[in-house]
Length: 489
Image (tube, rainbow, N blue to C red):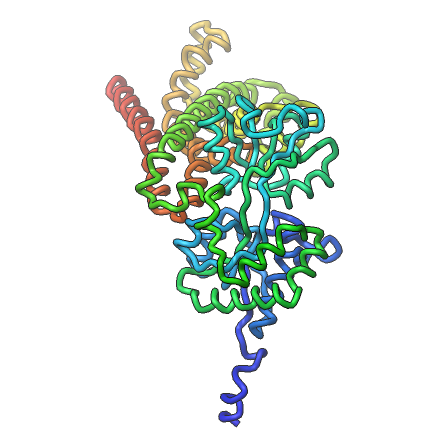
């Protein structure tokens, strides 16, 4: 019996499942949850993954991975293959096992219909804001356009909000794949995609760097699907088939395709070079991100301190209604995620008031941390000995004078250490505002790491910049505490 099994090969039921990584947040037509059955995924990348798994005699099993983390997860071995509109770049080919291209896309500009005759190219968008996905070919193109045409690149974590912000007037154009642009025009009225092709690129399947044998098997499956029309049928089903694909298939089948090397228009310098070589290009962006992080954190902390003092004072001295309302505010802000609060402030109330991204980030962080600060100040105020308050009354001081001259100074000394801790925490939590298109330090680092295919050097640089911002503050707080202790000794 064992000899028969060896001759027949490993049966399909004995093969491990084919774990394939993708990001369902990207949506159709790539990968999305089936509206009729959210437990299953649908999309043309889903069907390609299933096609590959069937050809290899394995059962497909979806693994949810954030789009920006697909490369790192492939290196970690979190899945066997990854596909979710993954672009072919030199960085991926240098650090991962990358398949032959299976789809050719065009980078195109989408604008509001009223601006269709005005913004026809990147050059015509001088001084304007253009949105795109961070860590993509389109983002690299916009970085080049920043230097050449004075464009401001606005980075997003998903491919839905760039177009919704375009419709709202928060950005002036969006540069992304034509597949995404066509879907956005069907979903959002009043948008027009320009016919001019800014660049071309290709989607590929990735695997871990040690999975060259699996990559070769995937290549053969893709070539077979190109020959027998399986890929074409999938693309036609999802309405993404066009005249570019037959030429791509012909080049792949002829073995003449090395897209990351032969398409200079999409090969950003960061991808082809080493981290050391591209560091001068990204270092200014990291410093700008650090400066933005510091300014945002300081402004949000000032807002949080001001509101926190007012809330704490109201809860200590206010009447029942005031205390009840302020307590409810504190509990709501502390009991819900700050990320949710940021989304509500920026996107949720956009129909009523369209806040700029920086202002929304400032309000979101400031309002959230005000709740935490108020608890620190309330506790500090209530820690002042009752005897001192009685003494102030006997001396004829009013309630406001007692607060200003006796209670508040002592409370501030008690609150200084936890205030410093909160500021350092806010400095790190500022990374969350990237969901509002604020490109702070962590977001710049993520873009850098994605484009060079490594987190080691970008991550160390990011950590060093955060430490450079937070350590002086901690040192200053310790000095103040020591001085006050000495003065009261």
